[in-house]
Amino acid sequence: MSQLARLIAIALVACVGADAARADRGGWMTESAMRTAFIGKTLDGHYADGMPWTETYAPNGRLDYRDQRRAGPGDWHFRDNVFCTFYDPGYGLNGGCFRALRTSANCYEFYLAGLGGPDDEAGEPPAPLRRWVARAALRDAPSTCQEQPSV
Image (cartoon, rainbow, N blue to C red; front, side, top):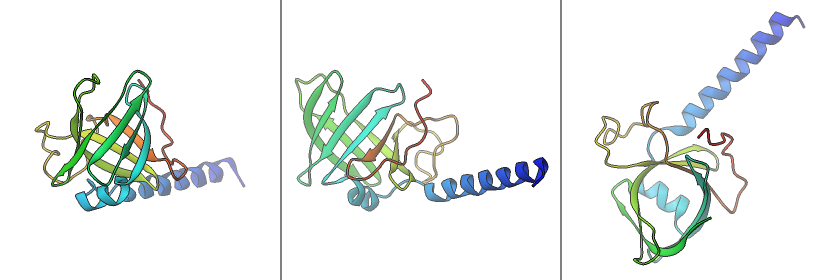
């Protein structure tokens, strides 16, 4: 196979892979999809700055959070297609509400909800300049999150 043919074959494989990744995103996860994916399970992830975290979501609305510096219990709830996590007082933890994308078989990205941008309520994935604040995978299956934090 000539060098040019090899380069064309590599480019075609890359394009097909990129299209599959875009197709898997499909937009924001619904409340139903997030309930199915996260509730009763543990997510292991990292923030955009690379710090790892773990959070378990109990079916009764309680959660358990841990990172390298802090740990504490709290509550989770949904506001339509937004997933909110808030922590009990006294643990030095803040909460927030997030929209989620499933980016591959076992990789989820979380974006702050309510920032008021055009993508926030439109049901579309975020614009390229808005970054995820956390990325995670379900503990009970191999992670498919390939990208490492760039910050």
